[in-house]
View 1: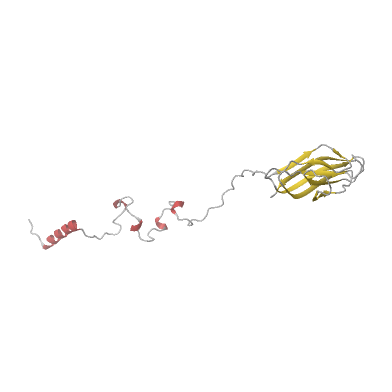
View 2 (view 1 turned 90 degrees about the horizontal axis):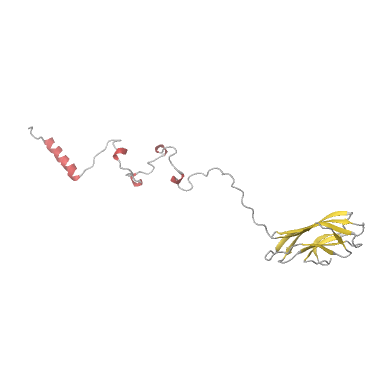
Length: 212
């Protein structure tokens, strides 16, 4: 057996010190790889700031949820959605008749609308139409809209009046915006202002819908 030298003794002491007490060792560059690391062993706290850059990330490997809100630009405008369902119509009152009505010498209600429904009060756009015909060439007919069946000239709706329809045949159209309450009706009133039964009105209608 060769005698122990001083270097042998120091080496043995250093080995036992490393095994028993622990010590630090310098590792060469690239000596630790993925094989030496347990899965998920490296935490955020183990990495220096900005240690991972774009060069370290594979293209297409990140998902939208990997980014903080506001970091990704908005995508292109999407296609328009499908047409929505039609809305429910507002309150409507109306009446229509194709029957011919001969006008006597006095103002006569020739058509009355359905009443405004309960809770349907508001501002309505109304239109009344009809076809006036002179049977004998006499009379100077006029027509107007009234509320609730009134026939008197002193109680028409202001501005809803056509006077002195000329010619043997004329189409009338009375348009008016007015306030109606629940239960109100609209009437089309005509007066021949001449010989009884000298004027008739056909194809008459009333239509009104709530605008507000």
